[in-house]
Length: 68
Length: 324
Image (cartoon, rainbow over all chains, first blue to last red):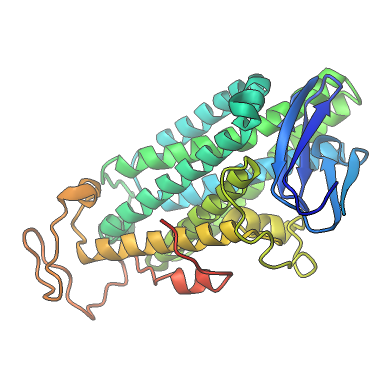
């Protein structure tokens, strides 16, 4: 992702169970119902790595967003 | 199973902590059990309802529905707590005296109970809807089935018990100091809720962050740790706060303490009086145009709620800025 730019993340929950997209690094908490998409807005990021998890499946649903 | 227990425990604890403080704040007020139980029950029903419409809410209002719902819930709860604290500071003296009498059968009017029931309702509604969704997900996916559901129930009971223990802990504070302590906790809780609301409004792209990260204390005290989580709920602690969060935190605390300071000058003013019919003291003279005299300076009033101006402390947490 480009750093220092407004971003819109589209989160696509493809299975039937709800999930919460959560990132303390990005300060985002958003429930995404099963089989649906949602949008989150991010103002602008300094270059760096931002970790996120799916809170309802925290052990396996992990990822990171890299801003450069 | 442990993972499920932990998630539900965390959600339950958030609601239970708020309910515990609200119960503490309404100690000795007749009829409060009915009101709070009503608020909690309505909250559980509402949580199921919100969870059922999660898709509609989430995608409503150009994808900002969930953030706006969360922010409105938090801000309403903060406003209700502010109203309650202001009301209590005018009735606190009376209430504290009454509380010492046997039976605790005080009837000081149900006014703040509406407000407190709404706070309990919203706390349960917000945390509950996430729990319901989570448990629904477990049930629907059928993964691990009974073990995960068992874990969720364990978390639910655990969170409830811890909230109850905190309430019992509050009750051990002597009656004289009790009002002061609870009033402080309500003040900090409301400020914290407002700061959390700011974060949601920023996520919705409505409020600017002002400063994207005022400080980073995640190494010192992570927001994910147990203490960090407790402080996050109780006073809105954030290990990497945005400028806007600090603004609302200090702004709200300051608003509270000044509303209370005004009420302390007119201890007999009730909630209606506070909204406009309150007799206004003449500037500089200390005299009042109509209504009761303000209490004399230096008079001991250990039973009244004494709230020190909180703005200095709160502002020192971060940047201080003018708002509104």
